Image 1: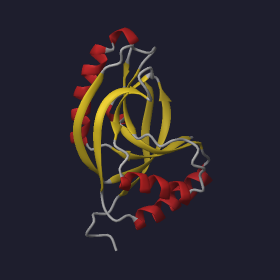
Image 2: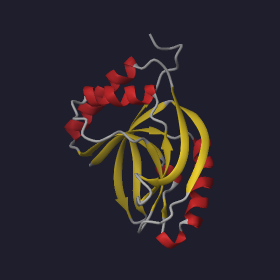
Image 3: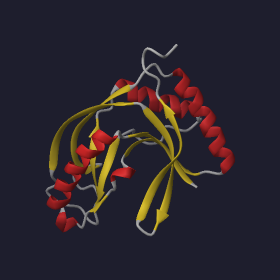
Image 4: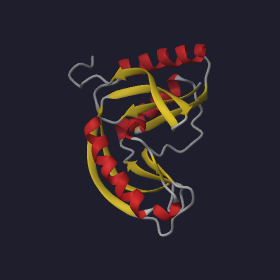
Length: 180
């Protein structure tokens, strides 16, 4: 199965992002955008690729340890929505400010899973995929914030309606007053 670790997006934020996505899709019409369904909104922390069941169990145990060390919900801020990873990118995404708590969580996951730190960590929420680049790419300032309180191990599956992400397991990030 194709898997990745990510932070879920709360429903109230998904509703805001649907509005942003729909405005962007209208502006990007000539790039043949394919909107991402709200149920697929997430922030990828670590892409694992194809994993076997035994690897999945090891990943879950490692996440158990990382979550046990968390000291509270992670505040996140969405700065802007734009083409990603740059102006000629083929993804339209809400960029997440790479704040300390988020970077630390990413680093702890890499270490717990003995994963190489091969890619630059560019947290974002994909809102639409473009068939071709759109120049000049729109930039939509956002001032949205939320607390990341749920970490998930996701499976990526193809369906007749496109890619669907299914949470195989969910972990609640402990509130600050519950951490020990």
